[in-house]
Picture 1: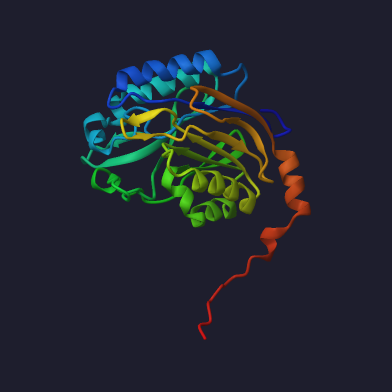
Picture 2: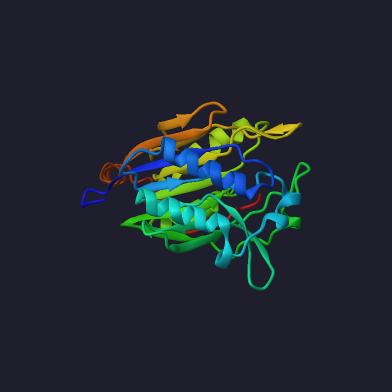
Length: 274
């Protein structure tokens, strides 16, 4: 990436075939080969791209990372494109037979270097994610050639506390990999932008597109947002493909030096009830 801290990122928007890991792995390889530009430093994928948003199918499609078709696919993509890969999320089965909604990260050589398991599970409005996977233990920030990347998955976006924790730990880039429903456009549009603005960081907000089932659809509006809330790149509709942007972190650091909002955070916000 050089000394200037300027990188090229890409996010792949796709519609997963429910409970078909093989088909989804083939699709993600094809989309990456067809749409990701040369010299891309970081490639990001959406939540549960291996299985789609179908909680009832999570455990049947779960894989142990020691023998995982999805992990092998992501590793090969990283090596082929010489890119870091933030692997969206897959359903992980651990050695002690626990299940997690996990985001794996691979380096340019295809090595697994980090895993983040979703800290907030969506189990409302008829969904029941918490019945099928365990909650993750902690936030995970990974350093990718000098860029600190804070990892989150979908419903995490509703909890600003995790993003502020990343910012305090030195985050340069926040990522939210999602399978967000079409019926909730305002929260998606608002909160993804807010997390970038309030923490003065770049944000990759990547979600699936297309139908989930006969009664529901993914929202299909992925965006790359800068530290001031400006949209740098987006896929506005249900198309499958890539969004790409160059992120200039020197400009972000200069903005932070001039707009010192975070210096005014108080140590305590104890509420007085009168």
